[in-house]
Length: 168
Image (cartoon, rainbow, N blue to C red; front, side):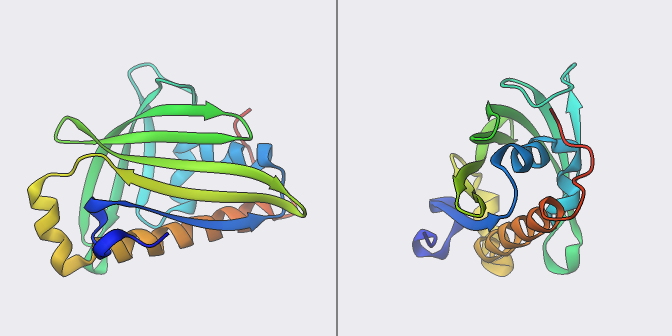
């Protein structure tokens, strides 16, 4: 589903791929948030916070990101796990300015030959300054490309002969 009017703060977007692995295996990779930097071109590292140590509903974290022209922009976002249904769905929301901003979701559907993985986002709230920054950076396009990259990296990892350390 393409973004409405090409502006990322107005809508949602999603990308899908089929991965030759079980839904549980792919879920294990996605839900292991400290490994997100292995899949995402934008998220570099993730740290659990406030005593959280595992991907369970309510667990909190901070993600450290880079992006923009030549990857020169750097920022961090606090987040909270919203959904953690092993092999079915994993979702979290990030904050911007102390408010819940963007919900990221991964859904896993067993299909012939593996698992259909859908990555999506839904912007709940975004500050005015971010709308201004979108004009020169085309944030909508960046996010679409990042989702394609993330799914490609997940596919490569999950389909490799050995899937290193996944979250149980």
